[in-house]
Image 1 (spheres, rainbow, N blue to C red):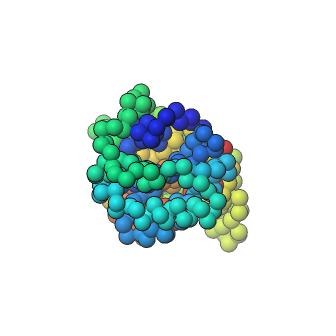
Image 2 (image 1 turned 60 degrees about the vertical axis):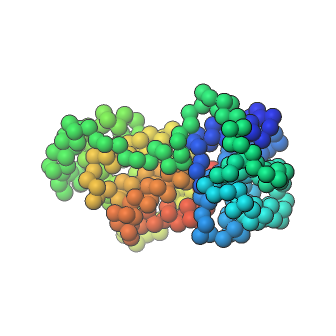
Image 3 (image 1 turned 90 degrees about the vertical axis):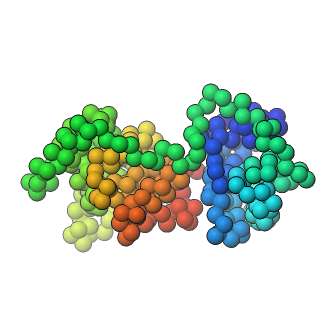
Length: 335
C-alpha cells in the first residue's frame, strides 16, 4: 500500500497521477482507503452513454470488493465544465451510502478549474494543483499510453518471416509447446530464436494452443502441462477441469505478476512481427494478460484492436465483456 502524504486537496490531486502511473483523461478515478492509506486505485471511463446510476453502481461495486477499504475518494477528470458531472457525483454518494462506504471527498479536474463537489462553491485555478509532489515518479501522458505496438526491427522481421515460411505441419507435431511457453517468459523477447518466435506466433493464433499458453503463464510449467492434457481431454469430450478454467475467468490464486509481465512483453514483440491482418490472436492474448495484470484500460485497447481485425474473435469479445461489466480478476482485490 502507498501512503498518501497530502495535506490538502490540491496536494492530493497532484499525487493521483503518480499513484496510478498516468495522467487520466475523461475518467473517474476511485481510490479506496484503509484508514489513512490508499489501497490501490481503479479508473473508469467517463462514458456519457452510460447512465449515472449504472456507472456509480459499477464504481462502488468494485471498491466494495477491496477487503480492507472503509472509505474512498473519487476524482473526476473531464473536458467539460465541472457542473456536467454533478449528477454522477450524486449517484455515487447515494450508492456508497447504501453500501456503508464513506466518501471522504469528490474532487474534479475540469475545463473550468478544479475543486470539490462536497465543499467548493466555485472552481479554483488549475495552476493551484501541486504537481511538484509527483516529480520523480514515472507518469505516462494518459491511460492509453503503452498500448501502441512498436515497429519491428527490419532484420528481426526478415528472420522471423523466413522461419515462418518454412513452418509446416510436421513442426506442429514436433514442437514442445510447454517448453516453448517457458522460453516466452524466461528469454528476452528480442533474443528468442526466430523459429521459436514463429512457433509462438502460430500458437497464439490457435485458440487451443493459446489458452494452454495463457494458463501456463498465469501458473507455471506444471500448470501448462495440465492445461495441455485438459485441452486434449476436452477435445475427446471430457470435462475441462474447473480449477484450470477458473484461471481464465480470474477466479484463481494470484499469478506471478513478473511472469505475466514477461509474457506480455513477449506477446507485444511477437505482434510487431506479425502482419496486421492476422494479429487478432496475439492482440487478444495481450488483452487477457493486461486484464490479468489489473490494467483494464490497456486490456480494452488491445481487445478493441483485435476486434477491428476480427469482429467475432472469441477471446477478444470475452475480455471486452469483462471490461464492459467492470469484472476484474479476484486476485486484484487480494492484499
